[in-house]
Amino acid sequence: MRIYDITEAHRSAMEAFVEDNETPFEAWVDTIEALEMTLEQKAEAYCAIVLELEAEAEAKIEAAKRITASAKTLETKAEWLRYQLMTAMQTVGKSEYKFSQFSAKLPKPRASVIIDDVDKLPPRYVIETTTRAADKKAVKEWIEFQGVAEVEGAHLEYKQSISIK
Image 1 (tube, rainbow, N blue to C red):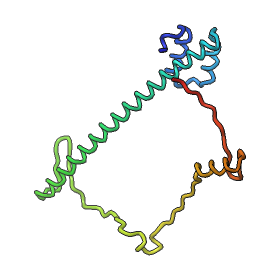
Image 2 (cartoon, rainbow, N blue to C red):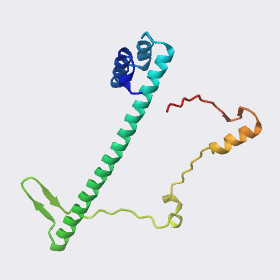
Image 3 (cartoon, rainbow, N blue to C red):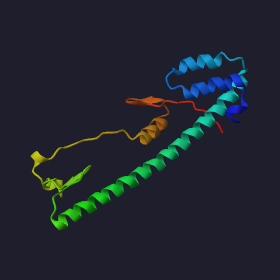
Image 4 (cartoon, one colour):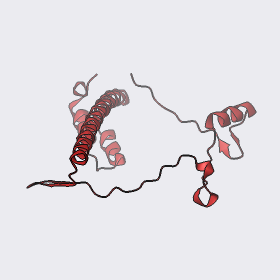
C-alpha cells in the first residue's frame, strides 16, 4: 500500500506530519487520532506511512554515501594536485607564486612529532588513559543464567517493537 491508497484526510495529515519538522509529535498524534477512521484503517495507514518513510530514509542514506564518496574523491584529487604543485615548486627552487586571484607559497617546514615507541619515552612525556566498559553480552548471559531480571549494577529491559513488511 502506498500513501496515496489511504483516505484523503489521513493522507493529507500524514504528508503534513512528514514535511513538518517543527511541530511536536504529540500534536500530530492528536490530529491523526481526531480523524474519523476505524482503528484498523488507522493501523493500515500507519503501516503504509512507516514503510514509505523507511524507504525514503534508506534512499537518502544511500545518496549520502554516494555524495560522501564523491566528496572524498574530490578531496583526494585536490590533495594530489597540491602535492604536485609543491613538488614542482621545490624542484625548480621557487618558494612563492602570486597570481591575480591566487597565490601559492612554500612556508618554512613545521616540525611534527612521530612516536616510534611510546614505551621508550620518559614517563613524564606519557599520558596514561583508561577506558572501562561493560561487556553487555556477557552481562546479559550472566543475568539470564541467574534466572532473575536484575543483578547489582545491571538489569534487563524489554522493549516492544513492531515488524512492518
